[in-house]
Image (tube, rainbow, N blue to C red; front, side, top):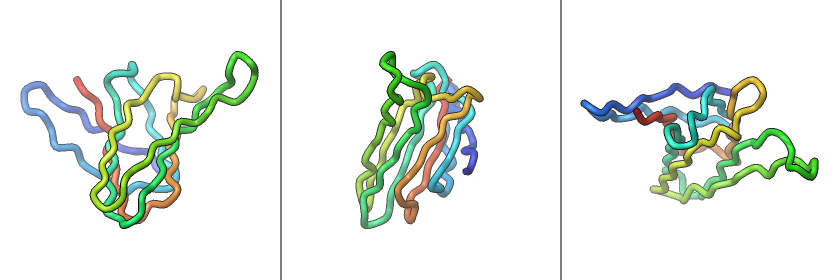
Length: 112
């Protein structure tokens, strides 16, 4: 499991986020307030990828919360996923998995 590095955008200067190689299981230590933190994926591989966020906890009916999944298009696909505070586990981490990582980079970004 790899911890992603937070990139912070700035009102005065903007920012060019640093993209890093994705792993099959990444973590972030803060989901923000539901409007300020997101994951930005890029895929240069010829195959689409599936990005899944592990949703902790249970529904009111004591069933495991469903894990949200997102499709990252092939070749020149880009995907931005807003993070929700409900994605954080008891230790404050958000866990993200990918079905395959060849050609996939990710930036963990926070808006001001």
